[in-house]
Image (cartoon, rainbow, N blue to C red):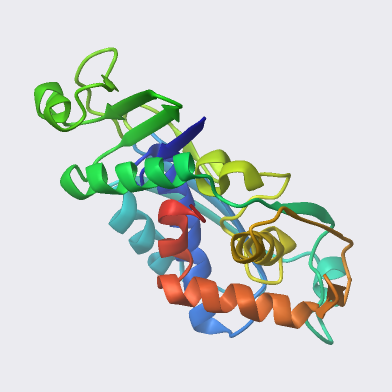
Length: 260
């Protein structure tokens, strides 16, 4: 049983805006320290960033409107807490406490991810999809039910009828769709709106990739300040995550679909 949402779902719009802001920070510094939260809905976008680098508000507004359309942007930027900043002052060390888990993807999860991407390629609008053994539920905005039924005749399609979707229908918030992004690998840490020093990003990615490579569950705990994770220097874990993010095209692209 698995649920997947597409990049136009309101929560994913929030994730994508947060990712775009992290991308802006990485243009200013190879290793910025930043954490971004986004709440968006009904014409308003509220953003708070704790950042070690200054970001031009005009660039932030431009990024938010490119992703979400013409919205009012309320942007607050504050420096990173000095106590946390000191942890990273001499070398790249674990930026948070946490428990992390990587789980091999199931055939069912891979199938739904492919279905979601296929539908999204034809309907670039808000959508949510669920698979539960033989039951497939498709909720796709701005789509004709009869067209979807031709391709997915056994699916439950738009149970309340055809709909419009988007942030004028529902609000979006960062990291609210981690089940969609991580499948069975969900623990306590959010993937989006954070730099690579944050274990929520780097260790989650590391565990997920290792689980897919070994076909085994990977579980790791860490404490803030740790210099080694899974018998590797933490900096190596960060570089593995960096390569993965760069391969996708950056943090905004990562936020579109997450790890699945």
